[in-house]
Amino acid sequence: MSITNIVAIAILSGSPQCPPVRDLGSAVEVVSVASAVSVPTQLLLEDPSLNIAVDTAITGSGAITNTAPSTTTEAQPTAATPNETVVAPTKPTAAIDIAAPAAIDRNTIIVTARQGPPRGDPVAVVNEVSFVAVQAVDEAFVAPIAYGYQKGLPEPIRDGIHNALNNLDEPIVLLNFLLQLKIGKAVETVGRFTINSTVGVAGLFDVAEKKPFKLPRRSNGLADTLGYYGVGYGPYLFLPLIGSTTLRDVVGRIADLSLLPAAVGKPFTNPLVSASKGVLSSIDDRVENDEILTRIQQSGNPYAAMREYYLKRRQAEIDVLRGKRCNADINLADLEFMDSSPEAKKPSKKSPAPPKN
Image (cartoon, rainbow, N blue to C red):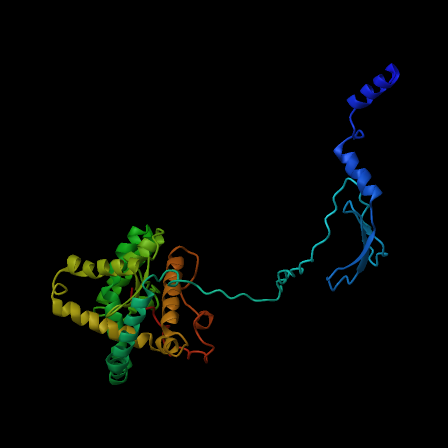
């Protein structure tokens, strides 16, 4: 063996036997491209809204080639490069149809109910129970007595009793006009009391109202003075023996009733005299307000109608003191809780007086 052959054998034995490989990725690419076998497969997309059959050819690299033309207007997917992994679409999920919120009709009327007692009447439940009880007593006893008093006594006698009761209240009216700094009306009240107590025979005749004096009677009390200076009427109350009132009015009324016995003394300090005066005043008021009470009782909601009438009447009396109104008359037809019943009969002689405070 020559030296040349020996060197050749040595060189061959020291060289690697495997061909050089560029890198794993290139090798896989070469093998994939070289050994790519096109396997035609038909994938059926099960979405009923699309209903598209796609013929694909799956190559060794996992690329998917669309062989069927698209029937939709959507953009076609770009061809995958050999190094990209394309995931075959899975079974499409059913679309969730979320209904849009219904549009609100502008003509829809939404009715809401007031929660709790009416404004200004926090103890309405108790008041209504008292109202029902008092109405039962009125129907059974007070109204028959009042009707008997009205029919049994001649009108001149009833007018005399009415005038005498009003004359006894003139000192209360005088004091409150002074508290309200209405000096002119206070002087007129002094004149009325003096004339009726003398010429009018202890107030049995209202001479001061007629010519030549023309001094009309005006009601007034401590509750009116409080209202005149802005004190609120407070919660509405319906009390036995008193009827419709408010916290402010009941406090003022108690003060007014205590004034005459304190100022005059006997006989008004006698409980029997005070009780007799109270009973006559109640019967007289019941007769004077009979038409109004009848209208209210015939309404759909007598309690609410009574409350509304009383509060509006009292506010009207305060407005008269403040010069905002000429009189305190209330039209029953304007009340919210009064039914459209026939109009009340016109008073035969006098306008009905408001309930006593």
